[in-house]
Image (cartoon, rainbow, N blue to C red; front, top):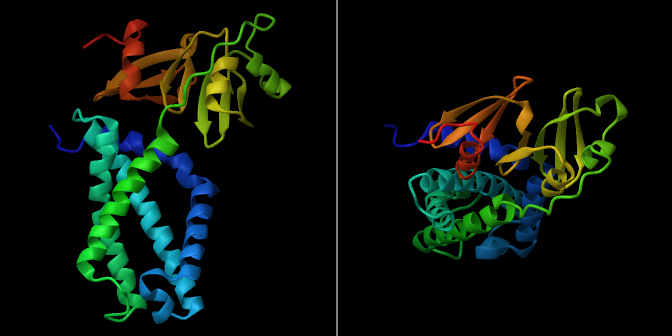
Length: 265
């Protein structure tokens, strides 16, 4: 048995992809770098000219923020797969993620700074990075990846999903699947797909009365458009009639079992 389950890592990276592709994360990190550059903490205001200091802090924010997010979130899923609660797994993964972040910080410091330029010693700096990484890991998991509450189901609308009224005429057809992408939802029907500005939980509600299942933080599928289901470690994969594979998170596997789509273990 592998110590690090590859399917869990793959699914976690799939969950992260919309955040990493979106502008929000990168704009936020650049803005943070600019603020830190102007403030000049840890003695950088005295040791670096303003322009170099801004570049230094923007690079620090972009590299440590992105690496910390990936390592923290994927590590959280891996640790959680061994039975720890998600909040506790986030804390451990954040502390672990502090190690590569520390390496990045020291490498960048070696390029931009001379020994003694910082007002903090190496030991306290390492502890500070690990502590900050731990807090950010827990906060990021809660902010970005905690499941949204499911909106109450809407009553049937003229015998078909109200969601179809949001689509172009040429793809209004029976629903196949929904996928969350940042603040948008990709709606797939038998005739094609479209991305609209709509919360995922609201899209699921407007899919009524189509019978469907929530598979994942960011995936829903119509039951009558499921062609096959297979296990993938503690999780599962649903294949639609169109041949698309959709990931099923560990917490949603029991729903497939209860629906008779997947034999119980």
